[in-house]
Image (tube, rainbow, N blue to C red; front, side, top):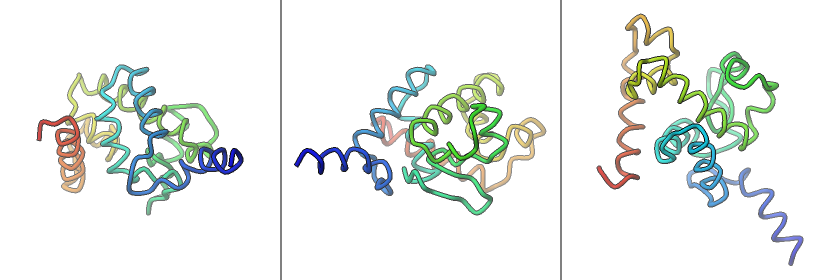
Length: 150
């Protein structure tokens, strides 16, 4: 029985897809607060990015809960790219990167979320794709719903 409980605890992040297990929610909360962010916002980003699937891989090669590209991962964490799929590293890096983008965009959450999706360069030059506007609206809509304001 103990071995089964341990196995469930170890495997639960790997089995999360389309729901947020309690352990991943706890990690999201911890890393969001560590970076001074609202955990519901970080969770909304992770949900839209990967639906909380630690093994998610995007079409362009983005990986993990936060769907990081190798270059962004390296700049944000300094950690090896293979760690992008590790839930703790991915949630910590997602919160850190969001905070960095928030400050880089002058405290504008819309622009910070757009930069998370399309890259800071696209936001800086005002070339935000329509798909990114839809992405930001999805994140903010989910965030407001989870916060009870939507």
